[in-house]
Length: 198
Image 1 (tube, rainbow, N blue to C red):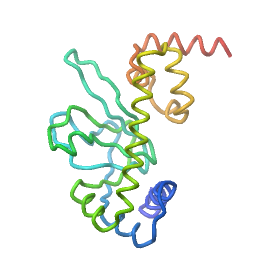
Image 2: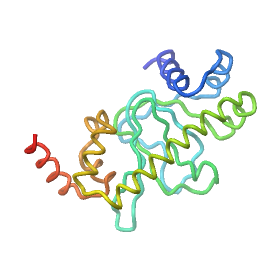
Image 3: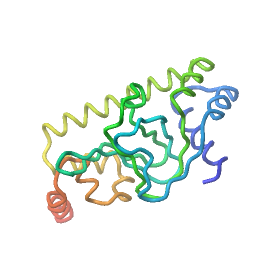
Image 4: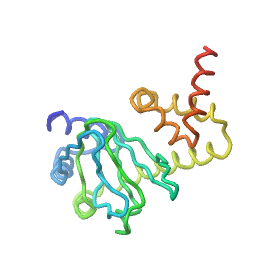
């Protein structure tokens, strides 16, 4: 995706949430820095301090943690039109406990914490934008926690398909199983039962 198309995607994303003037968008865009990652290349590695928010303009990223047994737990998928970061590490400057890598060749625009504070000072509308973004993320997180406590594997998978149909088509099944908190074998059984039930 060329720079013009990437900025068009970002502007559409922003204006779906807040009303921006051309000058406000120009200030915001001026603080973004493009980055390309090859498939399986990392944006963030556990133990490093997170220094940026990343808005994905092409491809798909995944954030995940690794437990003491070496098992991966997928926290988020981030395709085009999504932000991804480790907000805890970014805001506290503590070492990250998560990894973020590219599931596909990907392009993104990075925004540092320092640049974000500058944008807030120059264009207060972005405080509203990021507040709305964080509220949405909190609601989604609460929904996910409630689902993990109360739903069966089949219900979790069906909810994932309804909420993220495009991601389900792009992401390897073992990563979806990791995101849902079930084993790949359980997901395979659920998928077979789903197909038989059609």
